[in-house]
Length: 182
Image 1 (cartoon, rainbow, N blue to C red):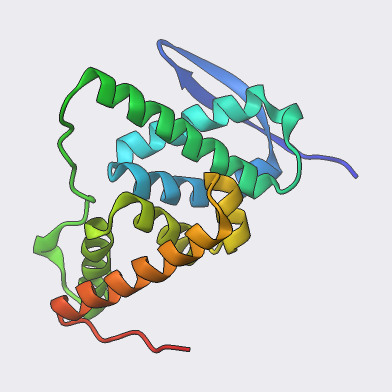
Image 2 (cartoon, rainbow, N blue to C red):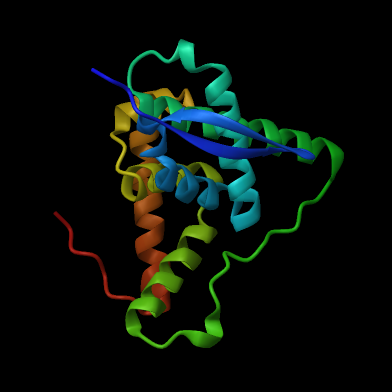
């Protein structure tokens, strides 16, 4: 089987480096960006996080064992944790940024619902928000999430249940319709 590759430019400080990335990695870029945006709550930081993760992925591409998608998301998550720790060592308090959605131009009920869900997600504690997003936003299975975060499967399952319940309560407070239960 022939592997196709695409040449992309990655900004490394003052220099732009052109690298060849396997198209199987490129297929996951949108999901990686969405996950990074959920983690950072800032589009520029999310782009930087994805870029840094791709650089690390390229450096360690020969060490991929198993599911490439899980490995890429795990690499991004670990890169986020590293950055988060580094920032918090340098600063005592980090101001939170807006999710980037403009409240002034909400014209349809769908956009209002999206805004409400984003607000509700932002109120969740980090460990609940991560699990809910990975499960419901990125459609990872519980076992994959447990491996990715290094948590026991039961912990992931309970945090997912708690996170979903807190989301339901938050959305009810916004007046959003309750999600149908299976």
